[in-house]
Image (cartoon, rainbow, N blue to C red; front, side, top):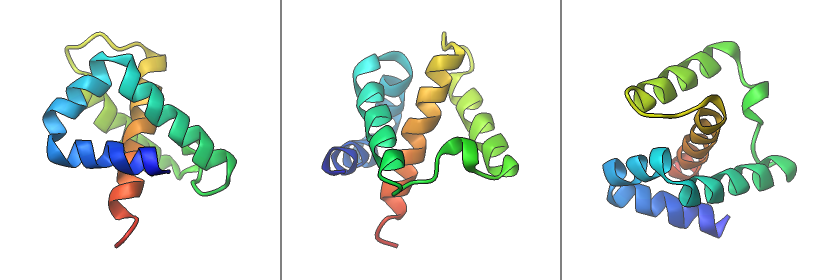
Length: 95
């Protein structure tokens, strides 16, 4: 969880640069997918598949907008969705 908070802090410091790294590079995205899996397995977080249909549609719309004009296959888009789901969780954690 500490890694997820640290990555969220990097996102807060430079959201445009971080977003580009998430879309184009594997390292940060893989870390956040690992955090997502850990949190889902420990029942801290609801899996994306279990969310309401409307929430999933909004999430996919957001991911597709981010990836417009960039090479991102379905697997990468799913990983991007998981990454931003985790970022949103940590941003809202203390609210």
